[in-house]
Image 1 (cartoon, rainbow, N blue to C red):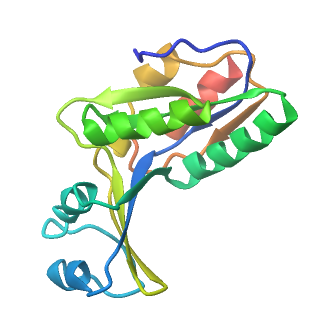
Image 2 (image 1 turned 180 degrees about the vertical axis):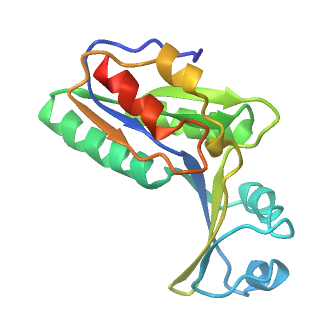
Length: 186
């Protein structure tokens, strides 16, 4: 079960893999060289690259923002709905029970998005290192906890009377798509 009670006023409910994007400038290419990143590339982190997430998270001047395609869309929808004064956005996904997960949840709370996160024990919150050299971005992602959303969490925390459902789960998620479709039909 999650920590957040969901109000009946949720109009758009997003379910996907949340990440914490960690953006840092790398003017001397030190991170790019240390972690053998290819300038301008986007990749899943290799075991040797995973430590970049903590290096960047603990670097002064790092910008930490919620990320992942559906979470970016949820934040945009929420911004639009707040301006119109109609509806509310909720987001479900899986994060680690760690500082990065708490940072992500705090960002969502400050944006006014209802979070319905599963806290995966013994797993770290998914992160994406965004290393900027001049104007070029290099992305290196560690999926970790975002792939651990169990079917039981979805069923226990289902938002009823929602106007729109945005489902963007990847194949790596533990929830088979047929379970989601079955639940929607009930």
